[in-house]
Length: 391
Image 1 (tube, rainbow, N blue to C red):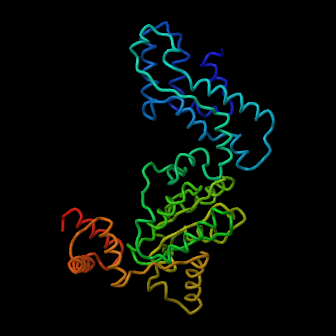
Image 2 (cartoon, rainbow, N blue to C red):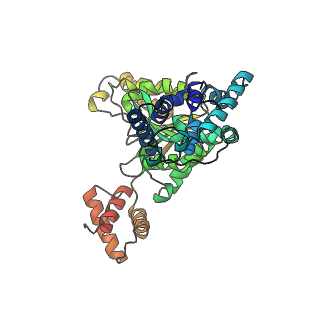
Image 3 (cartoon, rainbow, N blue to C red):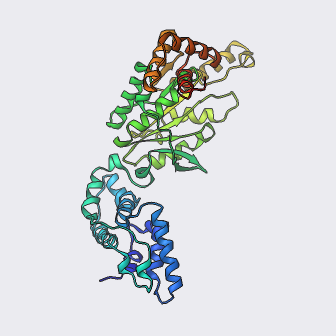
């Protein structure tokens, strides 16, 4: 039988697994000759401690990391390219090797203190069959970081998983049904590979624009949808982000929240070029969803209106042209009294608030006055305060 350490040292397609701490500590343990008991115990404990951070089952850990690994084979599958025979053979050999490794137990390791050492679980897995099934669903499961996470941010110019994304669900949002239906339809078209467009959600603060996009990302994550939040100061990175994602089998929303420009913003031109759809930016798996409190995304001052008619018209045309590059523009206005109170009633039922309707409504109206107006955000804050008995 091939020594377990050799199974790891010989990895080619799955070599990136060796950068993961669990594999590093396992390899250090397997490479040990076990003649130094103290060193063996230290390496053994370090491996088990690292494994426990993820799971107590070595087989499950190896299975998960293999399925999510980003390698040349999975990229060829994602791009629907022909797999060279030598790569296919290497894949099958390495899957068999990793499957053998997944059955490793403490009893397989030598050591004078073996009986008192902490243990881990294993189970029977068929990596070859499981990996083939995974490749068949690559358009919804993804690979690499996009297999393990569905919401991302840009940190140090790198796409980085958000470990604790907002768990907002569509079923938690009340009101604005018609507005959300348009965004959902566009998102479903994206997921189905049909024509989809960039979307601008604009309107009053607290009306649920950002919550809608986050809830959609959560709702359709299992269908292959991923969301990447981009700050205004990072707009210049979008071309390189698109380049990274263009051949990915998943679908992506580039989410720009609270987007507003001033006349001196350099990012204005960057976003305009992206929305125009240059040759590099036209991909069928990416859309831009942006929210703003301003219809034309531009803060206009009195000084911007000064000058002759030509200058003024040019300024207006420039600001209007940016928002016009979004294929869908949806308005989220503050709800009227009836719509606001319907949201309050729905939230009250959800939170199981038991007070008289007239008392509930009167309190909601008073809270809206203090909160700056009737909005879904104000309604939720009011109900949460009621639920917490802090009003």
